[in-house]
Length: 199
Image 1 (cartoon, rainbow, N blue to C red):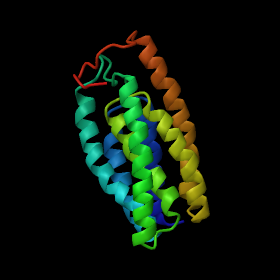
Image 2: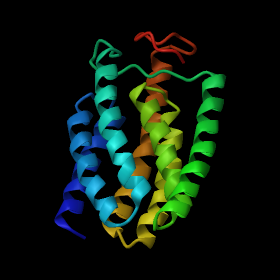
Image 3: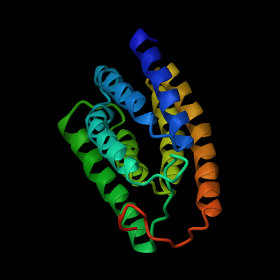
Image 4: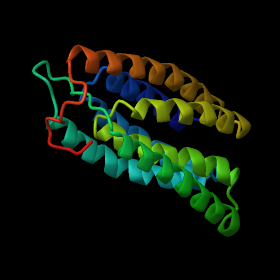
């Protein structure tokens, strides 16, 4: 356990707590967290996870911009559902992307747990994109990522990070319930995204 891992953990907790509350101020905390985790994962030879942090920087900036365009009168973001075709596309991207990235990491690097690491990486890419687009379904992917990540990080003796992902699992479960409730209370089943985004 290092000082950088402690700082990243605290930033991550604040970030996810604010996301669950649909609060746009999650983004500064998220940006700081992913920079720190980029170094942590590179040092642990979890290269897929380290690469993922670079993507997170870009998608956090995009999400910040997109959330600014899709807020309700109370300042919280408006939750939107995916359509069936988008859900199938997300599943296909996760399956194909995990297989390809896992093979690349297994054959071209000294990566530890290349296929498990690749699976959580690709799932996280898709989940973060869906989160930036305010899609309710992002929480189902985050719950799966958290379960897998707890095992990976415990195996790599990143116990504080495994503990963080245990908390993330609880927060993701809360996020799914809270965002679903917000979507239902808004009376928006099937309503178009007010920011003009496709489902």
